[in-house]
Image (cartoon, rainbow, N blue to C red):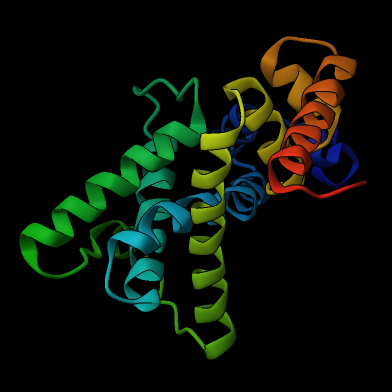
Length: 190
């Protein structure tokens, strides 16, 4: 099935498997889906949006290198794996005082030049991270996961249900209950 036809039904691990098999568009889709998560992790931890974007680029370049190392097993939890790579890149940057470019050089990728709109998007991702932290204080984990996957990541109920190994109706209930809890906690009437 072509990527365009499958849409958001394809899980992250399947995208990585297809990327390993040579479908570059699948890694591109993985990047588009998960770049905000990586930026949301990085931005609050660095001094500038530019540095967060540089670290994000190096994170995905390192992930792409790892995907093509056939002796390595692909991650079971791709988002957690990406955040772990981002954390390692961040720690390395702190130790060296600069962002490494080894993975980007290995892949012969040019540095990314960011405009004002790009820097605003990086800061927006950080704001999403702040909002998620607030939501985590108000919602049970199952509702938080379903709500953030649906609203922030734009994933469909079917994809989330497949990831969680449950029915779509259970995911819909979790999203609905999460919204009801938020409305009640914030005094908002529907």
